[in-house]
Image 1 (cartoon, protein in one colour):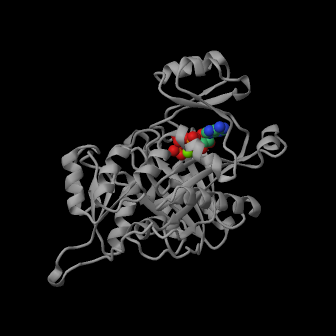
Image 2 (cartoon, rainbow, N blue to C red):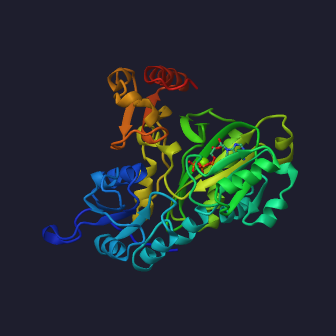
Image 3 (cartoon, rainbow, N blue to C red):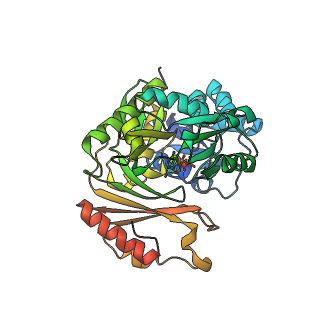
Length: 400
Ligand code: ATP
Ligand code: MG
């Protein structure tokens, strides 16, 4: 596939048009994309209905309409030279409209697969790494046909889930039936609950010409279905598994003819468990057609961040293999930290060495809401972990 080369800055003499990049969605991922694009000299335009969205607040232009609003989409196309997306729940139809008029990466096709767990599983299964055993439940007949070996399991809505939302853990058939009912009987997948020794993710960036670069796998700790801690340094997981995860991720990106930044999440199964005997050590969980929370450390610990790579993939600029220069531990900062509306003790945290604070400009700190993150960089993994634990202690985040 060929794409454009969109150089940053003014495209005409006398300060004519500025090359402007568009992003669908105004959350924190859009904000960090906008910031990366702007630091390279691009203008940016965000489409998001929220008047105070994190990305809208820092973008040159903010179109405040629904994602499917024809006028909003027309304005976006008029303003920008190319469009990307910052979350997978942007209606694929909007990306089809945009893709007809402007280079759009990732493509509507790739996003349509990633936003539907049923389609996604079928694709992931071709990566050479197994997926968790699962059954599709779209009707009562399929519910009745579920086999007992999938229990206990997790019932997940096929669409619109994130941060563990739209998921119910079930142990019995009665619980399964009640859970499907509670999810309004929308299309779901039931996944067998697997014994996890660890979770990791791999982020790759693939260009229009098929060039693909990657970050080394990150080790991720989730709490209540939400990412809590990412550890990124050499030795965070066995080398053979890390290589397998990188290869699988590149294959998934190639098979999708993917353009942009792609993250694939993996489970590492517990040694000695029957599931590991049956499936192998590594199981692919899901993919995100965008930069990922587990890659935020790349802003501070690598010579190229996942957001710079998103800009480069979109604009057809060269993709260079990123180099991590520091060990890193990232802590997510959830709304829970704003106890009774009080601001967390950022001054105490910033007194620690190698702490980088990122807040997303969100005004209300609800429980479980991602308000920001903190990356600790250090010369060694031990130092990064020790400092991150000290920061967690100050903030009242559970130790890891
Ligand atoms: P994200 O915010 O990453 O998009 P999500 O809502 O799509 O999350 P999943 O990644 O499917 O959710 O699951 C969230 C977490 O729940 C996983 O990271 C893992 O900790 C746990 N989990 C999900 N599926 C399984 C499984 N089959 N067996 C064991 N644990 C699981
Ligand atoms: Mg996930």
